[in-house]
Length: 324
Image (cartoon, rainbow, N blue to C red; front, side, top):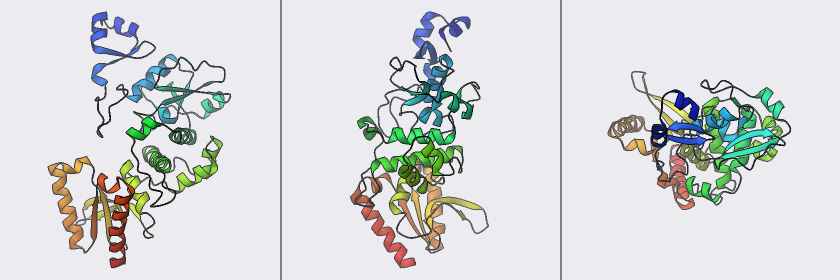
């Protein structure tokens, strides 16, 4: 809400100062909407206003601009990465880009009207706000992710695994994580081929490589990382494999696995520490063990550096050899 909206609603100046935060250009959000000061991974947030509200605040005053990159990604349904990355908007070629707040990135383009014609209205709360098409959105996110950023390296920790697989640099891993999440958020065929990404400015080699390793089945960035570090151990690796009880009812869905070999991988995030989840995990483990399958429960510690990854790969390789 703008200051005039708040005044019209009877909110006093004192209450505005106490209960509202200025998001941008006199657009306010209530303090109850603020994100926790610390992230789940223990990183202190640089901004606590949710990204979706920051995008709305910016476009409320600048509706002629078009959200792209991570600003558009959140409108497509992304929840990872968008709260920390810069929020990008396309602006006319002669626009002033010096007065933008720190969380906003303004990109000049002569093709703004072309982008506008292909843009989508994705925020039902603000139907006149526009986001670039899927290919442009993903290309801009991947280009931003490839930029050197020490702060990103601290908050979005990825091990350098080129000694494990030559292409697994932190930048490439992050790029595939972004593509996985974007495709899952918007749909498996969000970007069908590398051509549209190249047309949007992404190098052809990068576009082909990222799409070639994209799997919409990855439900979290750690699952993407796990798939990348074990994907070459044997053909037939699949994600989201259903497992059924003897009565035919679905028991669970395995994160990754080789059904032919009976080797299954689960990534255990923080929620697996909850008692109800632990009980369910025990049942899953018992059912798969009874079938003669091999189950690996992978944690963040197994993926923290090249040595731990190589150790994990060794265990999985032995299981594949034994059961193959």
